[in-house]
Length: 124
Image (cartoon, rainbow, N blue to C red; front, side, top):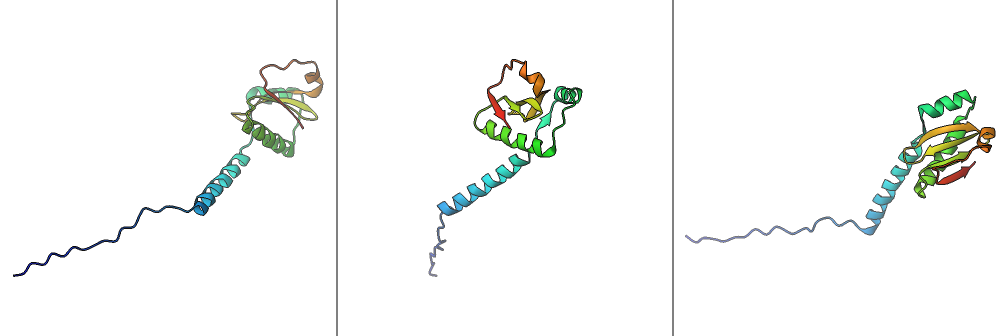
């Protein structure tokens, strides 16, 4: 009997290599998702800051909180760790890394204060 040696050839398919367009689309999509997630992050207010806001009868609207959140996030991206945020009725010290308001005072009280351990000022 004649023995046949048959070798079955399987075509070689190199691993998937995404094109630059696919890589860019994936990166852009990820960046967009990250921006949406970050923009939804709201500032937390420490117990101490809540007490100060109540004691000093300081009210901050939701729109103002959103504006403060956005600008603190932007400052954090630029390397600011602990900014002083000045708004019309209050001065807030914020830990940008943790997105937490540490303390608050009204603007009149803030005029007579020396602020330490801050590395940026945001005036709204």
